[in-house]
Image 1 (tube, each protein chain N blue to C red):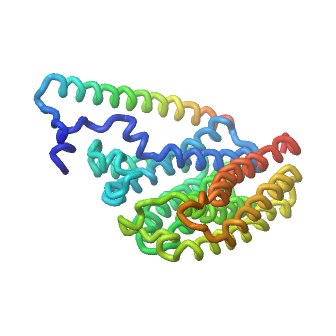
Image 2 (image 1 turned 60 degrees about the vertical axis):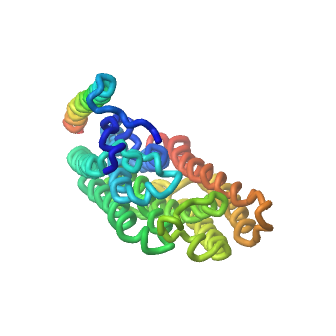
Image 3 (image 1 turned 90 degrees about the vertical axis):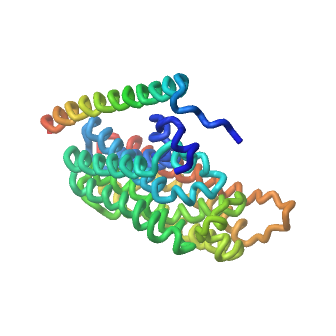
Length: 308
Length: 48
């Protein structure tokens, strides 16, 4: 540790909060909550709140472990230099202990209060993000965003299981939608935002495979996402499937997503003066897409079948 | 180069105590929150 770090003040509570990556958690909480509200069945509001709290704590714990493991990488990138560990405000071991502590607590509370199946899925999602993604595959393969997308896809699965108690086709479809949505979302961003990943040795797709290949893969994932997002309409409504509100929203949202992906996938930037407008449009549409799609899922259940 | 804080200075010690006090306060609130939550979970599970 540097002299500056050793003389700095102890870590503030806000530093521990920052370890949980609160901005990423917004998506985790939203998709998990939508699945919990859209799942057929009833859950006591206190237990529903507890399930959401456990999902958020688990995501926060995994994020803290990510901070712990990637402290050296974070120190080498401008975007992450001010994080609690690289800035010297927090000892590395504190982030590790905090991450393990809230992860274990989240799994135990989920198991004791909700169900051990939901707790098992939560535990797997934490290990998946912190170990399989962060430690193992992120520094080794340019497909890291695809693999990382799996971690972000767990919350709706866990939220659904917290209500129904079993893993059916519908929560697996919700998992798959987020899994397929993640690569075009992040690669669209990577096309117009320059990052320091190459400098610190993380093999991000646009750097390793090149821009043209990344554009083709954006198009490929978007083409898979289009029918996949409509698949919940094929499941009977009484068995948790989606209704016409979701169907309409998915058609419009996925159609728009696909059209924007075609523009991004087939174009070649003209040079430094290119404003990369289609890439920016795709990225912002992808954010609206996920929030609106999951919102429509809840609207479906609550408007068409409020008692189910 | 920025000046390093003197760890023995009263200002530094006061700041350090303030940070630790804040952390303890937040930890206390969290513990109280979880105590209430466990109580509520117990009642909810009894009703099932």
